[in-house]
Image (tube, rainbow, N blue to C red; front, side, top):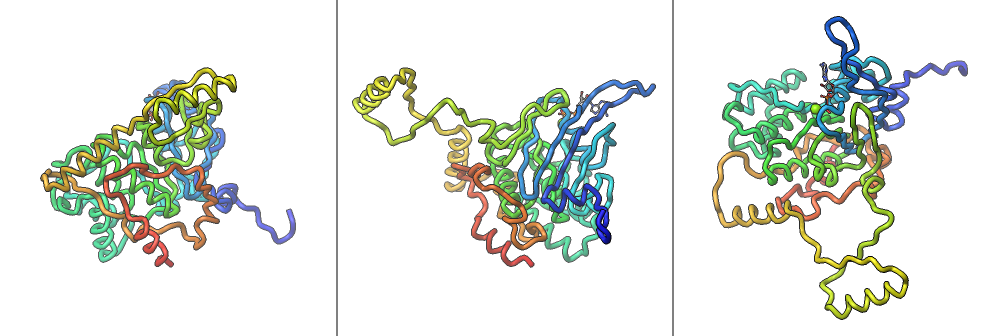
Length: 360
Ligand SMILES: Nc1ncnc2c1ncn2[C@@H]1O[C@H](COP(=O)(O)OP(=O)(O)O)[C@@H](O)[C@H]1O
Ligand SMILES: [Mg+2]
């Protein structure tokens, strides 16, 4: 070592390189009462989530996703392997201040109202009462629960409880957000709003680890994806790397008259390309559903429960640095266009930009 240079912990080196989560050779074997190895839940996985990425962790039930998340959070001790989270070891209390976690199940006190629930978590983070009040107002508005914030959460539907859970995970303005099934139990309108919120948090430079069975959520939101099965990562990459079919071409146009289609077929046949499918593209069911609900809303049809969420709360800052894009090293070409045909009145990106600019 050169004189004067101090050895840096490998965790700190990862953080300096813009890596918020790094797992190397991570393994967890659950043992039974007699300490005999029983379940190999996670087997030697390597993961790297960079600052500002929205990273999807996929896999069927029992593939090891929740165990991986719990090891990242320091709730489960790995059998072997190394983890760095925000430049520290998972059990390091200092990094907990900067992590938000939405567990798979909402653990909420049924008799507390949404407002009291958020206040409770705000107190855990020792936020002053004025800050708590402001953040709670903004978060309830953001997740569409401001009108029902005084009602006990025990009365809430599953989807409304997920919204409280999401608000709770953001009360400390975390840099890293770990979401286990954020849209489970939500109707498509609610799911779309939550997806819009997650996409906006990503644009603000938050790092999101998203664990879900909703494959469409992942396609809409994630920069990178890991697909797990049997405790191992079976595929990893950007959505484009994993999904683009290299041996296929699609040409989109306005409706073509039959004779033009025939001409195109002839041309391609002369080029030796015989197999051609010509079809009318379908829109996604999600977009039709959202359009119908939006129309009913515009006609003034009433419903109870959660309402449409608002824009992302302005206290949710980007990362500490000023030049986010550079720090994040985000390759925007890898991020899928958010909400391609959302009609849910998503989040106003101009508003968010102006809010972000005002941050120190
Ligand atoms: N505390 C535990 N004790 C024993 N086995 C466990 C424990 N937690 C999880 N497992 C087992 O580990 C495997 C992976 O589980 P989990 O990580 O919850 O999967 P996923 O979240 O992908 O559905 C499963 O076979 C599960 O039964
Ligand atoms: Mg799970």
